Length: 157
Image (cartoon, rainbow, N blue to C red; front, side, top):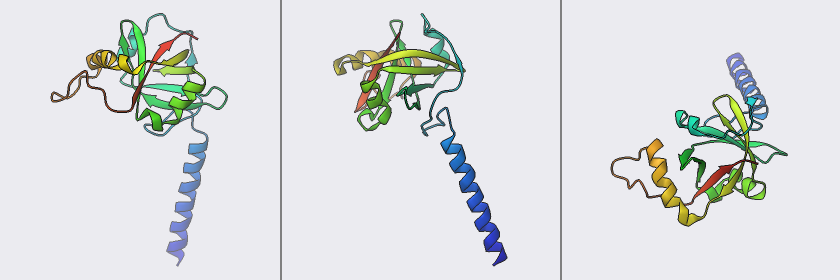
């Protein structure tokens, strides 16, 4: 009986610590959304080519009640693009449609930006550029886009 009490206390303490961690989180952790991004803030960069060194970035939407996610990005003709797979089911994509102001974290630096959804017919051309940074498996067409993908163009606020 004493052992069950100890186990129950350990489980309860673990749950409390996990809940506090979840409620006070900032940056996203893998697939778990975060809140306001941590990091040194910088002005909007004129050249996003440094993002090629990072496989993933963070995007914070909904400025009044920040919601941040981990995603990928790539350059096409000097412009940065951010995709969202299964986009119609994600909260952050709808937040961006309501208010395009975002903050993007690359490495340890956070940049203010704006996201605008690109037209669906433009996506195949952009996906080809994506293949330069993220080569697809040999058996997949590099211009084939998965279903329900939205792509956002990054621009200055």
